[in-house]
Each structure stands twice: as C-alpha cells, then as structure tokens.
Image 1 (cartoon, rainbow, N blue to C red):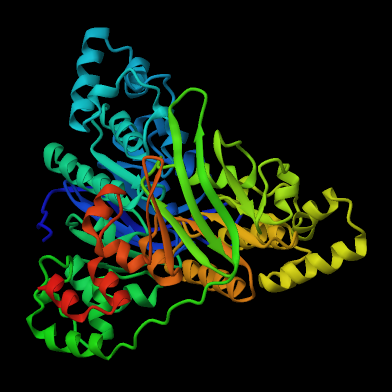
Image 2: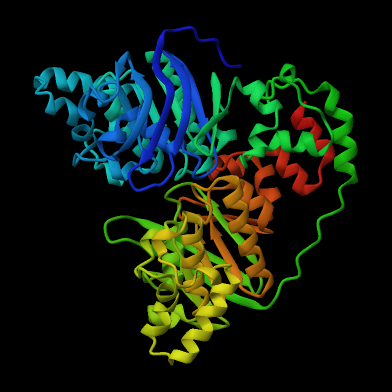
Length: 561
C-alpha cells in the first residue's frame, strides 16, 4: 500500500503551457500539478501524450536544450524556472535515462560516478568517500574498476543512478528505466528505487509504460497525461479501479484484466494496487466459472522444417563461450519468441543466423542446406533482420527510397522495384505515405518502414529484436497485429523479447536462453508456470495470465487466493 505524504511542495506547475518552436500547437496545456518532498510518483500516458515533455521541463532540458514558448509558472524547490541554469537544476534534479550507455562518461565505474564531483573540484579523499558511499547504496561497490559498458543492463542502471545520487539531488527522475531490461532485472530496478527512496527520503518520479512492473513496489500517486493535459491524478487504488487507463490506451495489470473478463467489479476498497494485497473473496466463483468455460487452446499444425540450428557454439575473442551447443528447429509458418535474461546470447544468436558473426562450432541449415559459407547478402535474400531502434536502420530521407534501397543495391530492374516496394508498403499500411519524408513519421510508423524494407526483399523468415520496446498499449497492439497478419500470410516470424505479455499473447512456442544455453523449448504458458525456470532465466512470473493461457482454473484460483 502507498503511504500518505504531506511534505512541502518541491515541484509546482501553475497554469503551465509549453510549445516547441517547431510546432504549431502547445505540447503541454494548462498544467496544474504539485509534487511534494518525499513523494514517489508514476507518470503514465500514451506515446506523444506529453509526459516526456513534462519530464524535460522538470529536469531543465526545457528550455535550455529544447527551446520554446512557456506560459504560466513552474517552480523547482521554490525557484522559478528560467531564473536558474541547467547546471544548477542538475544539482536539484537528477535524471536516469532509458539507455544508460548514453549517460556514461568515465572509463571506469568509479570515474563515472565521480564525474560531477571532479567538476566541483572536490578534494580526492572526500571524493573517494562520497563515491564509496553511494556505490554501496546501489550495491555496485565491487565494480568500481570495471568499464561501465562491460556491465549487465541492471548494473548499468545502478551506475547511472549512483552518478546522479552522488550530488545529493533532492529529486530523482527515471525516464523509462525498464525499457531495455529483462523482466526480473526490471523488478530488481524497481526494488532498488524503492530502497533508495526509503534510505534517502528522495522525491521519485518514474516515467514508464510498464505499469504493472512499476507497481511491484508501492507509489503514492499515478499521474495520467493525454494530449498534453493531466486527465487524472489519483492514488493507485482509485486509478486502477476506474476506467481512465483503458480510455487512454494504457495497459492495466494483467490480474485486473482477468478479473474484468470474469465480470468482477473492481473498487478502491479492494486495494487493486497489487495482486498480493488485493481483497478478492467476492471474485472466486466468477473466476472459476469463467476459466472453466474457456475453450481449449488449439494445437498449432507445424509446417516443414525451415531453419535448423545444430550444436551451434560461439565465442568472442576476449571472452568465454557466449553460446554453447544450441540446437532447435523452426518450422515454416511459426511465430516463435526467444526470451531470457540480458546477456544470455539471444541477440548473438540472431547475428549468427544472419551471418554478422561466424560460429565457432555447429551448423545452420536453411531448408535443409548448410548456409555457414553463404555471405550476409546471400542470407538476406531469405532471412530478414529488424533491429530494435528503427532510426539505426533507416538511411534514406524518403519512405519509398528507404524501402527500395536493398532492391536497388541488388541491381533489380526499376519496374520490379516499383512493384515490390508498392506491395510491401500496402502490406504495412504505408502506401498512402509512400512519398512522405521518413522524418514526418511516428516511431511506430518508422518501425513499419523498416519491416517494409525487409519485406520488399521477399524473405521467408523475419527476426525482430524487441519489436514493441517503449511502445504504449495502442502502438504495441498495432505492431503485433500487423506482425500476426504477416505470419498468417506465410512469413515465419522470430521475436527476441523481454515482454512476457507478447510471448503469451502472440506466440505458441518460446525458446528460453540462460548463460549461453538453450534451457527450455516450451509453450509460453508452461514457461511462466515453471517458477524454477523463470528464476533461472530472469523471467517475471505472471501466474494469472499463464494459467489463463494454460486453461488451469483451479491453479489460477489458488494463485489468487
């Protein structure tokens, strides 16, 4: 349960609006919001709602890095914005970015944490004591001599947190801290944030799409933003019992989905903030009736073997084995998820399949033929790869030219290029925008452009790395339904993901990796019902949804009660 906070205001918006110089209309409109010292607040909203802009106003990136027109008042720790500097703001508000790699400066963890203290010319002895203290708080003290980029995702988050905490900031702002973390590491990050707040009594602001994971530890308020306005500012129990989240396209915790599907009314008095503390006595029978009425899940009919990985191993020159004796078969028409902790070897496997790396042992068969000697270009004719960030794939300014790029590189005739590009754009729902600049598209539309550029090459397999990372529920659904239709049209789809919802909802089979080994090849529901396997592979246990998928009414009720 969240706690009541009655401290003095530290962030105060009064009739505040902001309009970027390059935009016609304000991104934030009539914001009235007070956050008090010691509060822990979750800021949620769909993509493009203005929540990141609100965060930038708080940490000073607006107006110092992103200029625009401001009206109304914003005070940080009693200081009116515009009368301070970005440097002075950083002494009050510390920001931990979504991608920690973009925040590192030092060559070692210790140097990175000490960076701001060096700028302040702090004496060496005091600096070392301060670094040791904050490193101990985030449990990274044993890594001070390591290079930040060599750490795991969770360790990188801890270093970034230590780097802003060392200045003694009063406000800690987390910008989508879970986006690149596996489920269990994400929960550890939320636990760490909770521990830091209790230890230092800091004010915590978390901007995040993964609502259920953030609520792994209690928050005081959920602030919901949509179309540049605050549409709700409520305690979690009140927010989760209402309809505002669904109306704004935000995914609710899955246990609430289950209760609503069973016809249960949800009230604040039931304390829906967490499944563990929720009062559910009135819901037992509706749940039992609903789950026993669910039809059995149909077994997928497998096609012919398409991609066969046989005893595959790989090691980088500077480390031990990254993958060890991996064997599995992907059949034509499958939609498969690859899951596991950060650093388990999932992305390395995709590089080996596409030819970006060469295996140290084993073989890769495509339609029964060993392709280890095929070039990257030859493999790309059959296997397409879509990476997580579309901005890192796109190289052409115009949409048509981007989708045509690979075909032109192959020397294909213009008529054939025109036909293939138009077909791919139609499949991806982008044909009306074919003559638009890529810069005019949203992130989700850019993702579709990268998929279209691969589809134009007519591959038989598409591998996608984190296809829904950082997407709100509406864009998540658009992308996944689009991929489902591609799969139904005959394209085999392999998805590397940390999203357990995606794994359960869209795939019939999951390959689970841990420490470079394939530890399970099972239906998703069986994966998430196996607590030992989930712990081994850093997967979050979602027993409610797993038992829905597996049709286990009795086990579901046992989990809830």
